[in-house]
Amino acid sequence: MITSEWLYWLIGAFFVVVAVLIAADAGHAKRLGNAAFWGILGVSFPVGTFVVSGAVPAWVLGVAVLVMVALAGAGLTGTTSRTRVAAVPGAGTGAPTGPADPTGTVERVPAQEGVAAAQGRSATSVLATTGPEERAASARRFGNRLFVPALVVPVVAVLVATLGPLVRIGDRPLLAEGSATLTGLGLGSVLAVVVAVLVLRPPSVATPVREGGRLLQAIGWAALLPQMLSTLGIVFTQAGVGAAVGTITKAVLPDGSLLAAVVLYCVGTAVFTVIMGNAFAAFPIMTAAIGWPVLVQQFDGNPAAIFAIGMLAGFCGTLVTPMAANFNLVPAALLEMRDKYGPIKAQLPTAVVLLAVNTGIMYLVAF
Image (spheres, rainbow, N blue to C red):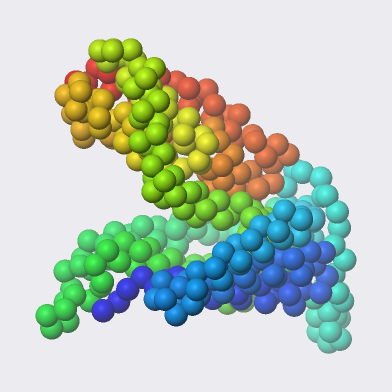
């Protein structure tokens, strides 16, 4: 029976390989801090398997998290320059890759004597990538084929999640219960990398790992915010925050006012999403506080409509919070925008309008 553990171990192995590449990049200004951060994260994935089984105490992972927080808080992660250096064929010319001014330059270690040195290239760096002109030429060359690897992920994920539970070996299912979706996502991601290498023909099969390492460093510790925030949502739910919020809202909510209850539920879900950065974490709190006891039980609302629209209201908060790093901070980092809060400022008017519309729709159609 296949469980999801293989995917966690594979992710951990990727982080460890990235850490090794960073550690080997002697010209990296933050080599040791980055290598330690991603290396600790990578090792924590397989260690988590043994923590769950009881073979390793949980405090080991707690210490790992604290060390990672210390490294990130001390500014020992991320990159110090947006200038790329040519390192391998197809790695670009070293021109700045975005409109932002470089925040510093990183001296690279000279290449070994031989062909690379004769060509005047630097030693291979995990930060090396293509320049704007080379990327534009590549886009013109491949056209819509660039989308093929990206489309492999959802197609494989849906097929495995749908058909995987039906496959059995003897009297036992091939996939463990509840693992089909993660297995499909992991398998789709692996196949997407293989397809990308076959279609795009990068200069080296190690290019996906090196590009992954470069992107991780560009994003920095914010890449872990979704994982941390989902954990925070579980902690809040287990701590009874939903019940506490429900007690407070019942004290301030006008008796018999459906409109006030709907507004409080939708706006509250959006606000909690802003605080927690994750609508999936905020939704159970506000649903336990207002959605179920007030809107469904007291006002006899349609649970499916209320909860679906309530989740959409939470997503309005996702648009305007830096805590939702994967939606707001990561794009700014990858596009090297001068204003890292640019996506939030652009999305704010849309979020306000959508929140008002969702609130009105719930009030009109869910009761």
